[in-house]
Image (cartoon, rainbow, N blue to C red; front, side, top):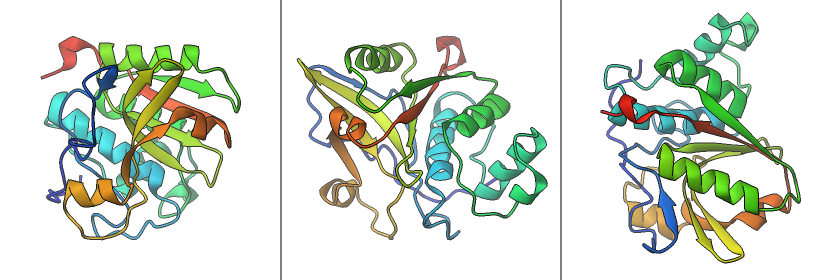
Length: 216
């Protein structure tokens, strides 16, 4: 498993978060992104990095004895589960929400719910599902779409009448800047209108169903 990397904690904090109508991740997590451990995954590793961010939340809040897996260790898990062929090891093939569910279940014995969102879907049911998730489980969400096979971490939802915003933690950042303020100023951590996602893609969301008795 990967060594301690001295990564930033809770990069969403102070991101102009209003206390009204906000439903947020509950507990600490580390921000994993391209090249954060010296491994060059630019252009294909966003799903792995979002999974690592979720695993860091699991380590902080669910099971401190299970370390965050490296990208190669994630690939090994998926091969061992027979979800991927042996040729997947050492490849630059991306992973999506389904693979994230498999790895979380394997490492932590925690099931995940997949929420499929079609382009142009109505928001009411989706917003309710995300709001309920953060209220009931409080775990980070993985959101993957068909545009450039891109994935992002979702750390909260803000509702304001007909408008809804997602709190996005983007793993595509490359750099050594180590302040939350920099990441927020540059847009790597931001509130983004939900409708902006639905205008261009379909999405699958992975929602880890962490029971309260599992939390440390």
